[in-house]
Structures are given as C-alpha cells and as structure tokens.
Image 1 (tube, helix red, strand yellow):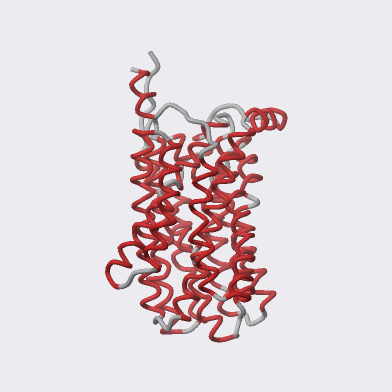
Image 2 (cartoon, rainbow, N blue to C red):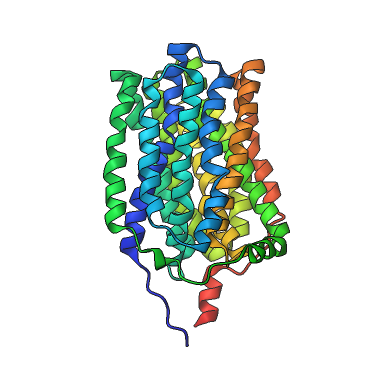
Length: 394
C-alpha cells in the first residue's frame, strides 16, 4: 500500500498569500486607466494596448518558465518575480511618455510570468489528493487580490494622483521578503527533469485535449481581461463615480474568487468537464441579466456572473496537468500563461470595437464570449472524478 503524502498547509498558506499580492498587482493597470484617460485623453485602443502589454509578457512567456522549472526548480523566482513586478508597476505613475509606459507594463509582466508556474506547481505537489480544492484556494487568493485592487488603488489614485504609484512598491518588498524566508526548497518539485523530446512527446500525445483546454482558457481570458479593461471605462462613460465603479468591479471579482473555490469542490465530486461547460454557459445570460436590470438585482446578477465565469479557473489548470502529468509546470505555463496571453492580445480588438462602435457594443461582445468557451469545452476529455479516484485507491 502506498503511503499517502501529507498535505503541507503552511506552504500552501505562504504561497496563497503571495498569490493574493501578485494578482493585486496584475490588476493594477486597469485601475489606472480612468485616471490616465482623464489626464492624457488616451483612446480605448491605446488603453487596451497598455493592459495587453502586461498580459502578453506575463502570459506568453510562462510556458518557457514552465519548461525551465520542470527541469530545475528555482525557488528564488517566486520572490524575485514578485519584487520585480512591484518595482516596475510602481514607476508607471511617474512617466509621461506612452511608449515608456507600455515598456514598463511589459517588463512588469515578466515578474508574474516567473511567479505563477513555480508557485502553482509547488501547490499541486504539496496538496496530496486534494489538488483541485487546494489549487482552487490558491487561485481564489489570487482572485481576491484582483478584487482588492479597485478598492485599494482607486481611492489612492483619486486622493493623491498617479504619482502615488511609487508607494505601492512597499507591499511587494514585504511579500518578497516573506517568500525569501518561507518559500519551500528547490527540491519540492522532485522527480526527474524531462528532456525536450519527452516534452514534445507529452504535448503530441495530448494534442487534442490541450487544444480544447487552451481554447477554453483563451476565450475565457479574453472575456475576463476585456471586462477588467473596458468595464471601468464603460462605468465612467455612464457617469458612475470612480468609487462606485470600483465597488462593482470588486463585487464581480470577489464573487469570482468564491466561485473558484466552489468550482474546485464541485469538480471534485462531479468532474472537471461538467463544471467547466456548465459554469461558462451560465455566465453569459447572467451578464446580460446584469446589464438589463438595476439596483440590488443588477448587482446580484453581476456577482453570480463573476462566480460563474471564474469557477473553472483552477479546474482548467488541473485538467491540463492531468493531460500532461509529467510536465506540471509546463501545463501551468500553458494554461495560466500562454492561453491567457492569447486572450490578452485579443483585448486590443475589443478596444478597437469600443472606439469604432462604442463601449456598449464592446461590452456586449464580451458578454457573449463565456458561452463560446463553454461550447469549446464540450470537446474536452471526460476523466474520473477526484472523489471516485480516492475511493478506488482505498
């Protein structure tokens, strides 16, 4: 009988806290946009390019970090990556040249590209037989960080202006120090380093399934990143105050964090594929219900839509790691990184639609995207539930 590997909750706690801060920084630029637009008359397309520069560099390079980390774990990447991103973003409010701003955004993205494959792989390795639930918790902390960004940054920028960005480096320094002291050792990944030919063989054998998974994530990422970019500008055009707008974005993202935990629990009992398909198909009508209602009812629909959209976030990562189990960091890089980067790149098109046809049209396109991702998910492979596997292993 195989001895069950213990779950390392302290490691999961440290990495989850770091993920919360990391993703708070990842939602940094969208909170700046209304203030940048007011100060510089930035077009919607240019605003989308700025967010895409961060998203693309933070995402498209993640598979390279993932392959590198599958060969040799580097614990220092989690704390150096966090500190690097904090420094780059803290400088964005001090520059007045648009191209330099885009460069800083792109450089900042490299920090989160270094953090995510290493941290998410550490989580799955130390989570025992509760991978989906505990990775969902890790992801939920990230989504909570996303949700806290508008609540913390918008009042800061409104009170002190964009020059206040320099002070936002302080949390990054503190968390980088925490990771330096308490992040797990390099050997936490264990196992043998895969060769390049073995990686290609893994990708080839799981080609169809990975195409479906990355397609789902790319479309979902486009909807998610697009809403983060366009919604604050849309609310501003609707004469909503910056504070009220930040509260609505917080509600959507915080509900998404809760949805991510529930999604992990539901997938544990009923399977990855049913959860992914069902939640994404449900998100579209909920978003339209939000836009066609008002008051408390509208806010409730927005919360439910956010929960539906993000409930499959960690589940798709685990699905990819199950598809190529010998290359977990690469799987994390492909799902949390590359596929998300493709979605981030396409946000530029949404920005262009907003300039040509108006922000309401851009929002309508974004609302339709989750159901498209849900239909793509139908082509994913059905696997035994984690609960069934635990029962079979007894």
